[in-house]
Image (cartoon, rainbow over the protein chains, first blue to last red):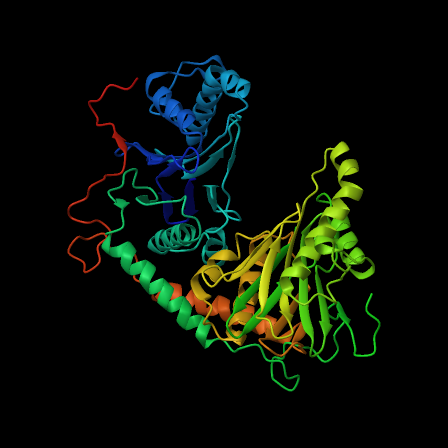
Length: 273
Length: 273
């Protein structure tokens, strides 16, 4: 499977992706799911992909070689558009092109045209923008209320984001949060695997050198996973055990319960069917 | 949706279930998914159900009124079998009975016969046993390597179990762990809802008074959720931010990287397609 996550906070954006793909349980490979597009001082964009690998590879390729005419205007590419919105439209258009090319043959073989992309970044003076592009080529944008997108095996890594992330989170904390989300997913699903690609982008810089490809020997990630695990255990240990006695300060059983657990009790004299 | 979890540790067993059901997004109700069967001193068994509510209600009913002949021997019920294995077989048989009754009509309407059960407990001198029963009536048993089962919306609550639970976990810690797993699920999926039914069973006792039905005003659960959230945040804050400098003790970028992030850089003189 795949796990990719992108966060947009006020201070910048973070992108992370695993790199395990599987076509059946016995055909597992390493493929990178992140692509960075950068023209320093002009634009910085990142594409993450989940789903059918042939679709995402075709999309990446066509993005480099085909121009797209939006609304009948001058043909453009993601390198020439003036806004991230138009870049996302070009990406959606490219998705539809690949669907036109490969969709019918896939469907004839009973295979869904399944691909989901995260695309975010910044162009010129525009604000940073983060999009989730569906396989039908339409897309939604992240907002302050929902400042992250996940694709692929998203659920294991969501609780840590739900708890710890907000638009005010400092950028390096957001990066830490993305890595912990990745860690939870790696722990709970073996089909998500190292190396992890990580990009941290600071708002307004239109370039980044904070890129890392993290494998099992990465010193920071190894330390982070180990420390997080230890601190979670310590936090867990420090929580009071369930308090059954109603005289406790925080009893598990309220004295005036509205509900009771459904229970069939047989006593010694009861007839057994 | 539904989230149910059952843990078997050396010291005992813990069962927890939410109580929200939905038939479509606009038809949400409260139905309890846990049933306790107890004859003090003889047997203590708990059934958790996920999936189609009509199926699980029919199973519960038939378990109370029908005897099952296993291998052509004397008809029995879960109240009369000598082993948990036979009780699980009776449950599987009952599942198949309901499939025979309702399956054809459901399938004709394009609805899967979807139901999954967790069934665990202890009878007489036998060891505690914990089973996961599929909609086809067959079942698997928990082992020391995999000492918990989840049904329904399982993924959000799995990382905390993967991290914190082992067969050696003390019983009250296991209960705390089940509640935190429930908390993560409640936070990340609104279709899982209070009240939570919780049962904690100590090995060998063949009865339990540690039953609670936990709603939004429950003093212990409220304290637990709040404290866990605060301690996770504190643990998160205490972790070092990503260290990009290769002279750090634990740098994010190793000096000799095998991989690099895939990156297309356009420089000022480059031709743009």
